[in-house]
Length: 53
Image (cartoon, rainbow, N blue to C red; front, side):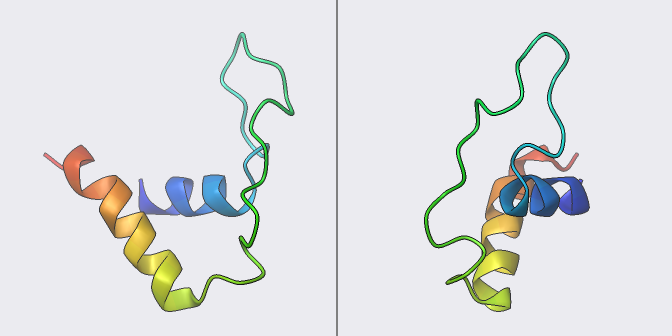
């Protein structure tokens, strides 16, 4: 799960849910250029913590 979330943050159009067009998710300014690895780890952890059983 963490790898998918990390990849989705860094490459938002790498995976597109069936039925949706590519390019709908815009890149977030500053990511990945300005986000540190520690900040990215914290963001991934925050986004995935509620997904764990």
